[in-house]
Length: 210
Image (cartoon, rainbow, N blue to C red; front, side):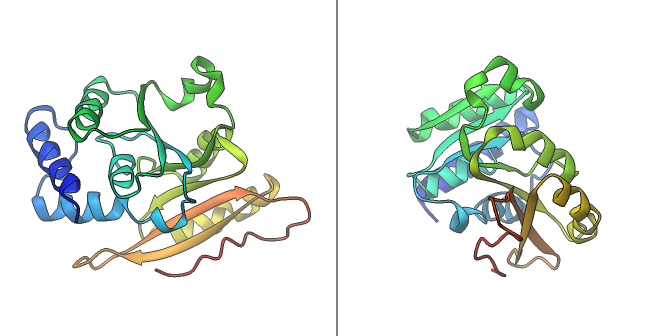
C-alpha cells in the first residue's frame, strides 16, 4: 500500500468525524469496503484513460484509482459541497495531477458542461443501487468506444437478468467480473457495459473472474 493511500485513509477518517462523509467508519471496513474495493477496476482501465466518477462522494473510487494509477485522467462529480471540498483538500494534500472536481448533479452536468458529452473512456460509480439508472445516466458521457463500470453486490445477478432484453434493445452489452474482498463473506461484481460495434453479437472485453 502506497503512503499516499494511507494519507488518504487518515484524511477520510479525520474529516468523517466532522462532516459525516461516509457511513462506514470502522478502520478495517474503510480499508476493505472503500479502499480495496475502489481499486477493483484498475486492470480494466486502459493506460492514460480519461475516467468520470459519478456520485464520487468522498472521492471513491476515483481518488484511490488515481493514487495507484498516475496515468489516469480523473474527473470527480458530486453534488455535495462538503464532499467536493474534501476531495479538493485531498488533491492538494497529495499533490495529485490530472484530476479535477465538478460540483453538480450528474443529471445536470452535460447541460452545464457540454464538452463532457462523449468525452470519457470510462464512467464509474459506486453510488447507484439501480444498474439501469446508472447506465442511462452514464451513457451520454462515454466515447463511442468507451464503457461504464458499476460496482454491485450479490443482488446484481438477478438485476442483470431482468435488464438483458433492455440492454439488447439499446444495442449495449454487459460483462461481469466477480471478486471477493479479503475477510468478507459476500461476493462483489463489476459490471462493464458498452455499446456494441457494427457487426458484434456480444460483448467481449476479455474478462473473467478475479
